[in-house]
Length: 100
Image (cartoon, rainbow, N blue to C red):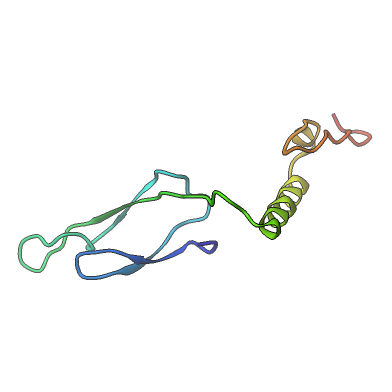
């Protein structure tokens, strides 16, 4: 679900697709208007979808290497103050001249 597209979300009239925004946290609820249980006449209620993220318990060596690469890329985008603090299992980066 890297692009946020979730297929096969169950609904009263069959499965449908939703798009989850980037950065959505565990437990956030989304209201999908008109996709819930039937009301009076042709009207339908709203479907509420709660985000639950599960991570694999075992990773392959290739998956672990990719996660380490992601950590390194994320570190490159941190500001100098954050980089001066040890994090992600990496040592602190000394400040450049004129910083800090």
